[in-house]
Amino acid sequence: MKIAVFSSKSYDRNFLEAANTDHEFVFFEPRLTAVTAPLAAGFETVCVFINDQLQANTLRQLAAQGTRLIALRSAGFNNVDLAVAVELGLTVVRVPAYSPYAVAEHAVGLILMLNRKLNRAYNRVREDNFALEGLLGFDLHGATVGIVGTGKIGFCFAHIMHGFGCRLLAYDVYQNPECLKLGVQYVSLPELLSSADVVSLHCPLSPETHHLINAETIGQLKPGMMLINTSRGGLVDTAAVIGGIKSGQIGYLGIDVYEQEAELFFEDLSDTIIQDDTFQLLQSFPNVVITAHQAFFTREALRNIAETTIGNISDFEAGRPCTNQIKIK
Ligand code: NAD
Image 1 (cartoon, rainbow, N blue to C red):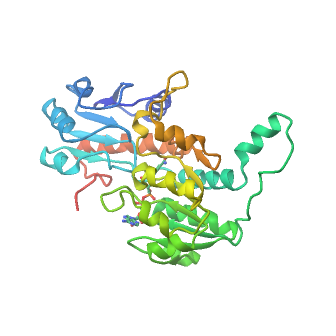
Image 2 (image 1 turned 180 degrees about the horizontal axis):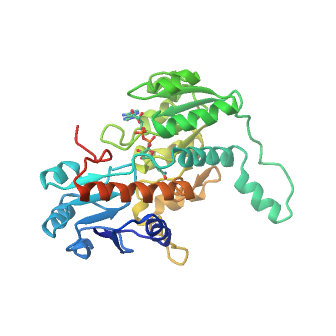
Image 3 (image 1 turned 60 degrees about the vertical axis):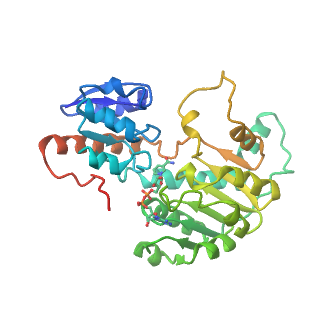
């Protein structure tokens, strides 16, 4: 099958080509938008990532140009208008799990970086500044960690934090039996927010979870707590979070995702003037650590993404039922 791969970087090309069986990949660097959609003319499959925009107008254009399959190289699918895809007869497949460990481990990395101020310590030592003032942390052992969303990644995260000796609280619309076995205690969202020293978000972005962390819920947080978001930027209202940092309600913020990240992430902008004042303000706070959507970025995850994507495309081509097809409930 001939596949147009959007938002492709050298690592996408390397891993997809290494896993390829008999498909023909054409790699396009730009993001898929209504403007770049003509590049996919004549391609039966379009392969996309998280910041490609598959709203109604783009999907209609793709369908009119002969596309029949949208293959996401991601687990999240909040960037696809599924109702319109179904209406157009487009099949949408995804990679539901590629390495929950990668994302969970990155979330833990952000926690340690913030708590023990490793970023500041690293810079100090490089300048022969061996003073400890300002680097005081707290033990994770005994701390209360609140997990919002206990699916594959949330469970891995719970497992790691259990190893640290944390007390684990969770909020989810379903209770995960594996988490219950681990001793995770399910509570309401307000109870979790008011009790946790660290809150880590692992639920998908949906209309129900959009701005789950907002001015009102920030008011419920334990003062000085740590907020970690490796899920999707839209889960938090960034302006409200900035207010929470300024007031001290949020004592630490670690994010791998940002609501307006499509304008910034995955590109080298070091030579340009960043126009996003909100992002620049966040960057200026000493208790904020930002990574640019790299939680998934491990060798194991990229290998699994490539292999699953190729399997999904081969299933579709052979007319086999694809277990990774996204269906509207
Ligand atoms: P999953 O489907 O296994 O788990 C999601 C959990 O969230 C489920 O238990 C579900 O019941 C729960 N949930 C759904 N709606 C909820 C709500 N309204 N309130 C509370 N909980 C709710 O998904 P996963 O593989 O664990 O991935 C979780 C999210 O992580 C993805 O949706 C994606 O946005 C994000 N992610 C980020 C990266 C990254 O690189 N930063 C990589 C992969 C995934």
